Image 1 (cartoon, rainbow over the protein chains, first blue to last red):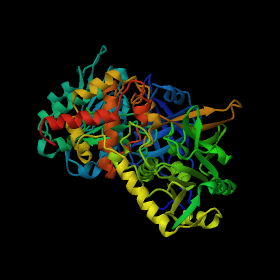
Image 2 (cartoon, rainbow over the protein chains, first blue to last red):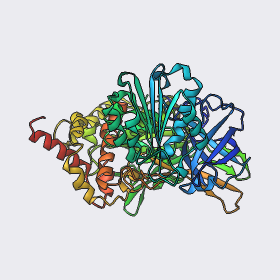
Image 3 (cartoon, chains in turn green, cyan):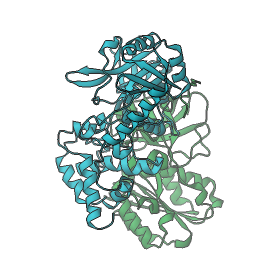
Image 4 (cartoon, one colour):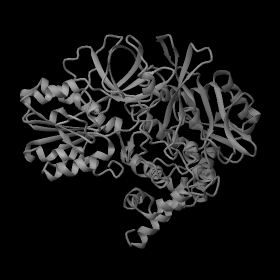
Length: 282
Length: 347
């Protein structure tokens, strides 16, 4: 490797691109939906289940999954952000037209090339619906390319369900099967009460032709994977997205490492077959 | 290109370097040695044992400013990636090998622009070890007691003068420009061969068994009792990863200046041994036990980096052993897993 000579200043991967918040929508008492446009007019060019690093100069950065579909969102993209830490708390105080920074997109995203013509079973627990909404809306946009589409959604309480208006549309869409479970029901709740795995009894799959996409809290994976395997779905056809607090997105800072894998490079989406080989994954 | 420099001319050479470069060199501090920027050649110690922090930290510094920004105008954000040329002087072979590893890891796409910019601005002048510097080192096992690349110039002590090898164009230019060097003669070259031979015979191996099988042996010990035992000792202070010349994990931190108008985003060293390293915003910690963290450090060096780059990430300098206040020794860990394997008749 020759180090001397040309002193090309490559653009730092750690330099955020200036962006503007063009819309803010309150989803629940903890989550808000931010629509963002890059100031340079560029298109973000992402795949479902990729993430960006959201940057507020003076406060810091945090990795956030992209929740909008890569198609139909024009030059903007959407991030669903739960107020949970320093940065996300500050993000929730932002207003329309405020300027922020964006790095990315990072990660491998969902393997779209593997799902053409397949039946798709989507399992979204809590905030896991945010990245999966990107995939769901992409699939709806290209509905003819896929077989049966089934969506299982789990939340703590009915008021915690994200994107309620869209979820109701999915429920009304005859080309999609949507099932919802809440841990704690409220008066008037007519759907399933219990954990998300309770929804599997309503689901009928063709194990030879089904791809599963699972995103949710870490505790959910083990139980959901057991249900999917019991349905006969192959280990290599179960895809999960893993959560870690990435600091850099370029496979260097070490925070997203699971055994020898950097999630920001070889993830966050991994098949169960690959994840099973990593002792620290599940 | 080979040359000779007399002991008495070394300071003259360093004075020449000081005219063009920042010079970073080993100096004595409280009976220990550190790499420090110097402007007085007489302070420099060339026959030091080892330094507290490795020289690579001058290419990958702590609290390195990445960006300067204006709170009122994001377009005023400026990356900090232009650096003065520096010479890092009298770097031991183990540390040269460490820089080679860091180069490979941080140049891999997506690359680390700041490291590469500093690396391009750094000239490495190595200093061959004649014998082991301390007891708890395993550079010989690792083949890192000598370096065959990664330096611009290499000094070898012949006992009465230094044999100097230039390995790069910039190294050659520095030697050609300097008045301190003379041509190496036949006796100098035989002196170099003798020094190299004597070095090889002065080091001893510390690892019991074939070190090339270490990553394979470790994989079988993933669930071994050793990690629980070492984890009980570990205080999670992070000293081992801070002094390690091939640890590069970091955190990114923002700081607003007192004027409340401007600020900096910098990166500071972080380490996988620190308790909250794998904590996420919701409080979930994905490596919450000390035993898991100790295992991760060893596996990262010996298994994960080896799988990615074909070579171990540990250069055997022994700094992590020296600075561990809980007496955790990777030599002991390596030997423990090797002995267990032998006990099973597998080596």
